Amino acid sequence: MLLAADLGGTKTNLALIDPAAGPRAPLAEASLASAEHASLTSLVEAFLAQCGQRPGCACFGVAGPVVAGRARITNLGWELSERELAAGLGLARVWLLNDMAATATAVWHLEPGDRKVLQAGEPVAGGNLAVVAPGTGLGEGYATWDGRRYLAFGSEGGHADFAPLDEEGRALLAHLAGLFEHVSYERICSGIGLPNVYAFLRDTGRAPEPAWLAERLRAQVDPNPVIVAAAQDPGRPCEIARRSLEIFCRALGAESGNLALKIMATGGVSLAGGIPARILPWLESDAFLEAFRAKGRFRDLMERIPVQVALDPKLALLGAAWHGLDAMGGEAA
Image (cartoon, rainbow, N blue to C red; front, top):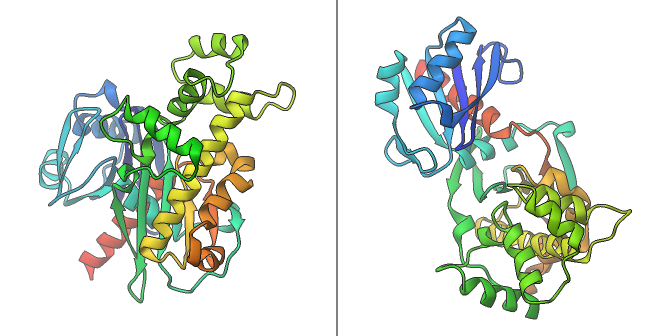
């Protein structure tokens, strides 16, 4: 059996997989609070104690770069090593996989009900796939076809320099440059970015903040659900929330188009992460798609690239499972 996990700073999703049944039919599954455990080994042992079964191998999707079989989970202070984890858990093999590489792996396996098409385009068989995942941060990854399967790779592209599209974007960049040493796309189109956009509109006087919304925001630790709900409430139109989400979507569209150009994602672009599924009407609007297509002489190319939203919230866990099963099969061969 294979243990698959999507390891995050807040929670870790785990599943025990029978190779014959596959990742979509786990033998056991759970979500555990990461910070309640001193180490990944401790967290995994707690899960396996619930299952009453032990796997032979494990594949962990982790939020961060994986170099030479090692990774560091910044928010938890955990240093991870494939060899040390295998020894500590009594497993034959452990694989560490960047979480965006895991997500890109899963995208290839998406079923029709797992996606919402934003732009049908003209997909090229075996064409490169791009993944952009706005969650807490802005994850990016991609996959390339080797003649038999897609090989997935993570990246830190969300930290690339933000490039304004218009006067408002230039003002936003100037505002954020006064707050941060480096202004990346993650500072705008992610869970940590949307509040930055909202504060820019409020603090520069570009949009008024209603008293009722200010009160709601003060009562919440995470402002994002409040801003999104206010932007999408038809009964109480809210200019500052709507404009915040519009700027968010425009920046996300531009950066998704940037990644598509850089890797020639003729197979398609998938939006994943925790946010896209919650703001589907905005992603279907001109704010996102026009920014995605607006690449000058390459507009025709951008209009042919399929764009979709991946709706499965456990995409990274599924990707870690598929990667682990493929690795197990390769070693067996």
